[in-house]
Length: 367
Length: 223
Image 1 (tube, rainbow over the protein chains, first blue to last red):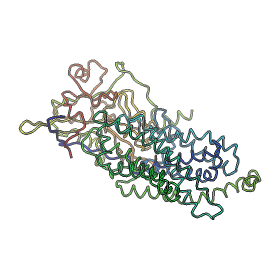
Image 2: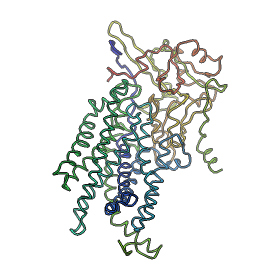
Image 3: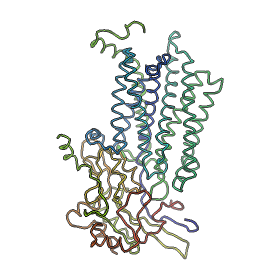
Image 4: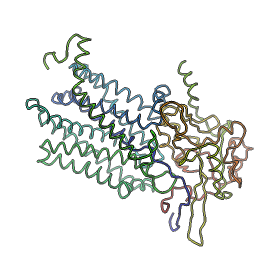
């Protein structure tokens, strides 16, 4: 309204229903899809030099998928009813699609990991080919979950699934670079990974980062030139309460600085520089999820004022602190699980294949 | 079939799409804002009837003040679920826990709802919330909840609690498809508005004499 003052006397203020726990869900599925896609480079696309990385890439994908499921369980107010998702599917619901995509992805990637550790390249290739569309589908679906809400201007854009997908690949590969550099530190000299491999992975991150930056620019500019609702929504990012997390963490720390670090001749050719840049990309991706999910709920749909985080409902949680503790707990669980999986998974595969086939994969020739 | 048995046990099936102007019953509400005095009796009646917990409301009154002294007036907008003809919340439910009944009331089956909050995100009117009181199994606390048009009362021939409590009779409730009903007469003979008609949800709560500032989100002022 122009020229008149409108003051709110009374209205109800909605709660922020999707808090930090749900912010972590697309973060974990994205990391999982990204690292899975990289592991298929060696087995599906024939880039044999990536074989060293793809073994722990696929384990990381599995662990991260488990973490994503943990976040969902923590956020749902009735987690015991999750099985109903299989019994009563709803084909128009993106959540329902996610149920089946995540299940398919979990099963297929587990079998794929089995074949990788059995050193059965032929079957690993077949399973990898089957699993790539499912893995990317899982993450694009998360984008659709938000993108199809016509009541929320910040989410309702055709770019949302693409943005989620690209940032998934970016963050997944970046986390893999980070983890590989760290793991490399603790390996004996003769087992160290060729650094050019890590640099080429860094180049992939650069490619996806540039794509992501372009998508973000398209998204923000289109919203700035749209109606008042869209403009108000995107102004949250540019000048509003989400300015620090958007401009500061997502754009500058998550895209600009990593791009400089990756491409600078000095830092781009050092393992430390690669690791720092990759860690920044992962943090920036978390900020991106935060900005999209929390930002979309910050503007109430019919009321006035802004909705604040910290009033999330779910799992008897009413405070931001509790949400942070749950998310941190899940992340630490993931780190422990990954460390255990790297050590134990090959042993388990050895043990089981000796029981089933009578030969250990580690004793096979040619590897 | 086992599936049918489960469906029967866990709630009604996904309802078939309905069409406007059908002979079927279509519950609707007309709120005459010229009569509303902003007493909040409907909010209180709803809270008492449906026992919604603190902080959340199935029915409430939005109140705005427009203008500068001495030319200033209060505008009221009683709010509730719009029971849309094309509800965006129903299509996003992964377990079909929320559904549109034959008579048009959009309901949540709290025996099925998994609490994913997809419907809360999809509702363009902020009409939904998590009700921590609505729970049955061992683990878990709360399902999505919303105005039901007081289905438990309407099914037994009574009016919704908010309609009954309204002291100026601003609220009218009835069957929109019945040409003789008071609701359809009011909708036909007055210029009515709905909330966010541009979203194509076809709300079934009509307002007479609504001001554009109350229908929109308040961009300036507020707290």
